[in-house]
Length: 88
Image (cartoon, rainbow, N blue to C red; front, side):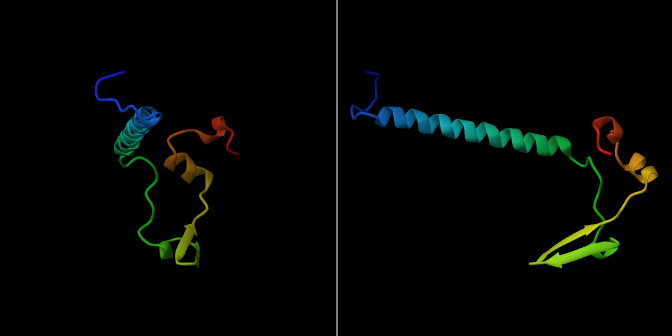
């Protein structure tokens, strides 16, 4: 038996499982934070207010707003060619 272990059956295993679970949670959190920081300001910036969009709807305290883009606007705003990714 290892030094500092408890002789009650299952307690040592539960402690190890809890430690591994905590370690996995910490690693997952670090990965998510790093991905968020790395992404930074990439992407399309939203307009300042929902009223700035031609179509909008509010329900249950949440507003969804949208605008249709022309093919030329899509080419300017997206860095990836979406046609090659089968988004048609």
